[in-house]
Length: 270
Image (cartoon, rainbow, N blue to C red):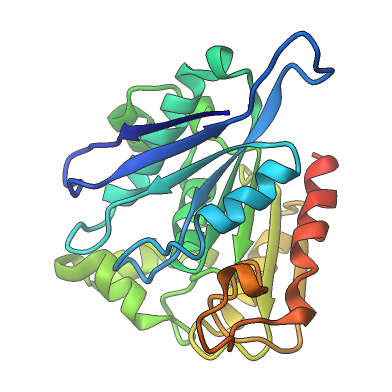
């Protein structure tokens, strides 16, 4: 396996912004010569990127046979659209290395948890915008994910907002106009890629209405969507098992562990 770390720097980036890649080996003894790639955006309320939602999830996708990259994007005091521009730069970098890494360039999926889900979904709704391509120095098609995998995502800035995420994301830009712009259920278009999405009914930090509002918007625009709402479980479950459990084990949720085999099936159909 080839593992590398690439600095990702745009205007406003924090010094530690980086892309960590996990590229599986290829040789003539293997049937599979090229693989899709999953680009992970860990959560953390736009204050940090969670270790629990990074390598443990990456290892699961590697075990499924995918190349993986983890974006450690800039958080507060960085402000919108810094993290989105970093994600766009990560997409550009993966495309630049696609031949060398044996990546199927038309099968780059973007996954995100919580605030990382907001970042992933932001690329999903804004990939076709000229300003994003211009500032990244690519054509818009380079920025389009093959699909989105959203785990208990922050979506709405309205009644059911995780207010802290938007305060950290916008800071001095915390205006009605920018809240509307970053409330992603209001930004869905017919150009959205397919979406796999899961949430829990009892999430006490990011209410399930975030996902419900997004699914309704996706449905309105005819976007292929698979949505799972689990009846129990708190926020930040990650793999939902011992691998990402806190010392008190409170976020082990057996009922939700099926999201990984479910997303494996969903990916196989893409």
